[in-house]
Amino acid sequence: MDALNTIWSTFFDFDAMAKAFPDLLTVGLPNTLILAVSSGVLGTVLGMLLAVAGLSRHRWLRWPARVYTDVLRGLPAAVTILLIGVGFAPLGMLVWGPNPYPFGILALGLIASAYIGEIFRSGIQSVDKGQTEAARAIGFSGSAAMRLVIIPQGVRRVLPALVNQFIALIKDSSLIYFLGLLASQRELFRIGQDAAANTGNQSALVLAGLFYLAITIPLTHVVNAIDKRLREGRRIDAVDPDADDFDAEIVIAAGAPITIAKEEEAL
Amino acid sequence: MSSETAPAHNHGVSVATSGIRLAFGSNQVLRGVDLDVPAGTVACVIGPSGSGKSTLLRTVNRLVEPDSGDVLLDGRSVLSDNPDRLRQRVGMVFQHFNLFPHKTVRENITLGLIKLKGLSKDEAAQRALQELDRVGLAHKADVRPSHLSGGQQQRVAIARALAMDPEVMLFDESTSALDPELVKGVLATMADLAAEGMTMLVVTHEMGFARSVSQQVLFMDRGSVVEAGAPERIFDAPESGRLQRFLSQVL
Image (cartoon, rainbow over all chains, first blue to last red; front, side):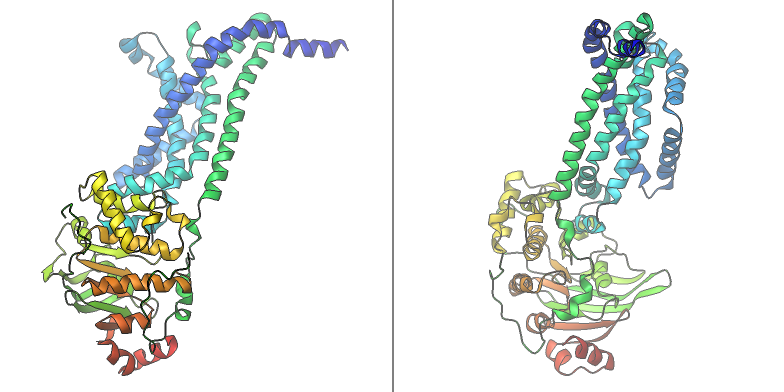
């Protein structure tokens, strides 16, 4: 009974939680969201460039995109964040003083871009070749066809994967505590961890975890909702790709010239 | 071209190819194809699958570049033209429609008008409605293509191509993917267009259409035009054994 009480008060001490709550809400939550959203935007823009470069006909575009993607996806996020945050710190010192926050965003954004680039690439590649052909036949250049016809369709298809990536970013934003943040820059994890370290009680960290869940769980349901809508809303793909096979069955006999009658279609 | 958009389309110009050869690796897809479609006439290309019909069609608007030979529009070679400009002069309709699923029916048509022809949004929308009206689908302007039947989608695809004021129209098995009961409406739209004087090059398995609408039928097999002539001649008095065999299989 004692042991149970100890465990309970270690993780669910409501007084400790109440003490940490204001900081988590007013400092931690905004910082976590700022980190995730800005690195998400950065990662999306860079990811799109990577995807287009990765699909390019030119080897000198495709190749660097490939290497970049392989390296950043292959490294542990902590390594990348430290290398960028610490490695570039002297440069940042010159530009904006001793502030690791921008490097945190940069590092998270660069990591995300490697994943998002692959997501976009698979989306773009999943668009039917006939779409490119149709756009080119109208007179669009290759890049205009890509921009106006192919990419909008490809992006739509990978929206669920993109939201998943954003969820990952929210969680990974906790890693930038490595870089040594100012008190006002601390995100959810760091605030929870500081409070836990100061009090020897884990409840503040549990509360920080609940904050994460309050963001991420609804987002996973958003993913499911988009996914469902995309799957039920798309019917154009139902065209039979092997229509050639029954051509011979639907020809009109050459002996009987067709009568030209308009507006007869049933639908 | 201009924004007054009279309902009548351009009258077609002549299309010709001479000695078109094309190989994909060791596969000879086109082995020196000559064709000559006078302005305002319809030529149908028939033949078995894999005979090179669709590829031939794609060399005319240079979706596929021939290895050798020439393509002439209105008597002038187009192989050194800017291919994007050329394709604005040549409309194309595909077997699987290839409408843009993320755009409404109207936007499918206005996209090229706005971005390539420089029409204002209003002008383009008006033009789109005119084209939709002639294929009987003006009331579907605001829906997505996925809500249309195959036949309706193909008529929108025809409207999309015609809105660009092409001088020639290419049809690549444009009814092959349709349910039988929807074929007629699409063929009727094509026949109307032929009657207006559009030059049309039509790859088709619709022998009835070829016979009644075209002035010329070309039978292709294994990358060559084996036999060509007026439809009555081709269908009623085929000379080559290959054409006789083909017709006996499809008729």
